[in-house]
Amino acid sequence: MDGNKQHVMFVDDEQPILETYERMLRSERREWDLHFAPDADTALQIAAQHDLDVIVTDIHMKGKDGFDLIRALQASERTARIPIIVVTGDTKPTLKRRALDLGATDLLTKPLNREDMVARIRSALRLKAYQDQVEEQVRTLDTQVKERTRALERSHRDIVWRLAKAGEFRDDETGNHVVRVACYARAIAQGLGAPADFVNTLFLTSPLHDIGKIGIPDSILLKLGPLTPEERKTMQQHCHIGAAILSTEPRAVAVARHREVSGQDSEGDIPRNPLLHMAMAIARHHHEKWDGTGYPDGLARDAIPLEARIVALVDVFDALTSVRRYKPAFSLEKSIEIIHKDAGRHFDPELVAAFDHNRSEIVAIHSELQEAEAYWNPLEG
Ligand SMILES: [Fe+2]
Ligand SMILES: [Fe+2]
Image (tube, rainbow, N blue to C red; front, side, top):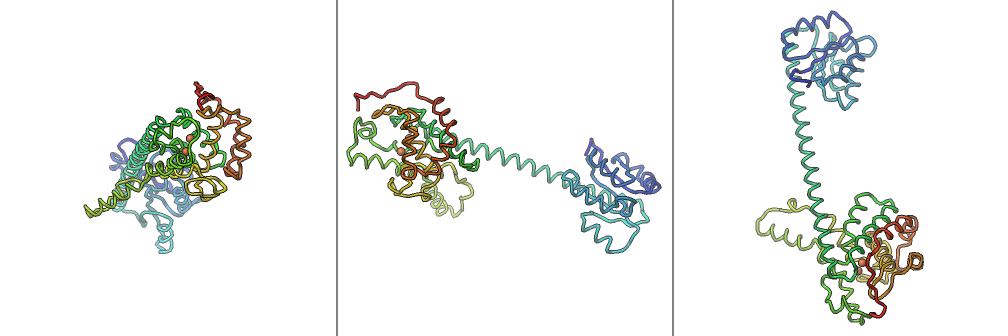
């Protein structure tokens, strides 16, 4: 609707009929803006220029007829919902049927009567106003849902990054390790052509791969020199601890308990967190090996979740190219050579291929996110 007036268009190839409409509806001009079209093409032009509220059209016209006009109006998103009143002198039921089947809202039979015409147009206008209102409500709801979803996603991301930060305090790897792992993982997932959702979730959750180290005693986590077999076993528990931290199980238990106590189903109130789901798979399985010799579950090949296979590769690559307590940083060439040697053993060969394919990006991430301070001391361990 332009301004306050509602727009009504009349289409007829006989000029005297259009003039009759004009005369008939003179007193309605205070509320309605009237448009007149002598053929279907002019009618479509007017419909493109104005937000029409009702169209009253003849069926039998020279050139494009009323049916062609209805079809053209229905085909465009902009005009598809405008109510159409068909005026015809033809009383054949087949013609009426066809007009209604095509989407006409109402039928008027000639000769026309002013009261009847005004009443039909008014009821079509009410229909249009109602439709506009519903559309507006749908748009508002849609915006609200999108805003809330975005807010929810922001809070999920926020929690994940805070958790990753907490993990950093417990590890001998400096902060940039988890950031590099996230960037390398994203580069490989993109190289594989993974869907954007997967790539984004992987980027956010891969920094949590070692969150389970929170539960490993300092005497083992910070030990200089090699671990005893017993200590290594304890260290390997970080996969289980990480998965337990990120597990959605406690939530399932809480939901079940709530249902028991209140008799209500609260499942719908607690949104499932897809970030936690992927983070858990990574925490548990990032030390699995392609040939099944890894831990904690000895999974092999595709049984290892893709996200965990990707993190397994980039975590090792970053450890190789970085300084650690127990080793200097290896050169890029040497690190890439080691990765290649382990393709099909430790690593998924397809991921090693994706790594090669995206080599320039991986080298760029490596040089951009290098550690400033090197703290390896060969005398220490
Ligand atoms: Fe780990
Ligand atoms: Fe790591």
